[in-house]
Length: 364
Image 1 (spheres, helix red, strand yellow):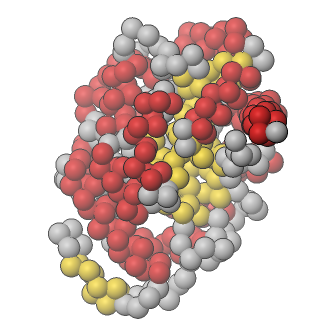
Image 2 (tube, one colour):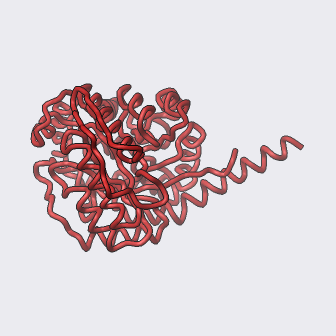
Image 3 (cartoon, one colour):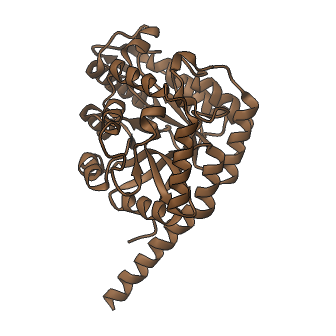
């Protein structure tokens, strides 16, 4: 195989709080600890992380504003800004993103999501159901793409948006004319939308064979695919399993009720299917893909767990299945990020080099 061209991203969802997902969203503090976030960003820059996710939700600071503040105090790392349609007009949104790109030298990606809980959507005045939110996001991105192309005033008359002669004099800054779009989701609607509008589908993991079938239409369209997955890698499998056990012991068992209640309220295919699967008898979807923390910390806590060698081999398996981006989380994040950079990524590259060498020898 060729040298794996992997791009590594990291979530800032838990900066300053080790097991933030164990608390209900209503009980989470959305105040900004700016210095903690700046320190995290600089740690990520030092470890070669490509971009950092600023997530969206009523229990968090606004992702665009947070990215603007952090972009002014960093140098290289990009910001993957989460966004939903229905919160603002597409014209205003593109204007905001373009302004952000000017403030941080084009270091802006977008994580477009359709929303996961009808109750929270209504906080923002959004009363559409799951499928309609994807239909609206289709129109939203159609308008955004037209504005980023800049090929004339934009007219659009759809079901959810009507735009007349829209133009913007603030361009997107950087090497690209528009931000990369990472479309989040597992549902058929997410797959369809990623094929139409995204640069990359960002999805939750399954066994490589099962995942390959899900993402085949995206790859066939020439788009990329990334995984949102947590990490628990240690020098030995025994140490990794012990770290998982210690983590579960440290989390209030009441967190299980938090995520059962969330699953009942959510209409996200990605979140509800992952939480439901975590309730099955086996916590292991593959020898390295562990769902044991999902009932306590939520769907993004599905994790690659094992020795450095085992996790590196699993990442390479996913790369063979078509995965080129990984959006990681860890407990705590900085320590897991360091282990990945020092111990896992070099092993991924070494395994790929050994495969290349073996393939070349077979041809002789």
